[in-house]
Every structure is written in structure tokens, then in C-alpha cells.
Image 1: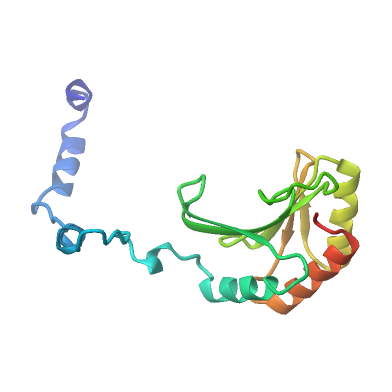
Image 2 (image 1 turned 120 degrees about the horizontal axis):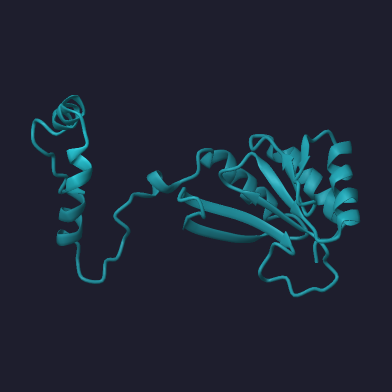
Length: 177
């Protein structure tokens, strides 16, 4: 590291020095929370509001509506997704559901909390084409992937009634398990 800094111009060095003038601010709030908590109280340091999806109210409304349909979703919640984003929740059916043990299901459907689309997957490209066209005929903007095994179906998270009704109709024709 020392020899990397030797190659900097004086102007670059001054710019770096300016960024570090005025001392350092040390945040001890989280440390105080940790020290002052009682034994066995293992709440996360991050408050839930920092972890929640962007459209929390719309997402919660959609989840509550989709829990009432015939084929209830398998809900997966995590604090981080594969891209390092905070809080991720997904609703999963068919092949995308870890609880699916059916060999009859040849597709999967997922709705993810921080996305404005549903993900439709199938190894059967003909089946995926049929499923893709069903959503397209319903007026959804759909985008098949280059792998031909995934299709994105763009949704408006605030239109929960339409999403619920269309997913219910879709499952009547194409049961997820």
C-alpha cells in the first residue's frame, strides 16, 4: 500500500488529506445498545424499518391477499439477498417452492418484495411459452430471458386485487403442484 501512495501526485495526496481533516466521528449508539441490553436479549442492531422493502404497505397487502387463494405461497424471508440488498421476501409456488415434492409441477412462480415483476421458470420451453402467452394475453408486459427457462412478468404492486385474481385464475388452469 505504501508504494501505491508514492505514485500519487501532490494534488491527489492533498485531496485525500482534505477528506480526512476535522477528525473522526465515532458512532457509539449501537455499541451502547449492545452493552446495555439484558442477557438473552438478542434483537438485531438494525431496526426493522431499515430492513423493510421499498413498497412495504403494498407488499404486505399483496402477501395477505395471496395467503387467501387456493394454492397458498411458500414464503421465504431473509435479511440479505444475493446482491447484498437488505431484506428480501418472496412468495413461491411450484418448482420455486422448497416444500414442493410434486413431480407433476413443471413450472415455478415467484413474487419478490423488492421487484416489480414475478418470475416464471420452467425447464420445459414449450410449457414456458404457453404460460408466458397466458400472462401476455391478460395484458401484462412479459420479458422472456435469453436462457429460455425464465420469464419476467411485470406487475404493479399497488394493484393487489388484479394480481390476486389473475394468479388465482392462472392456478385454476395451471395448478402449481
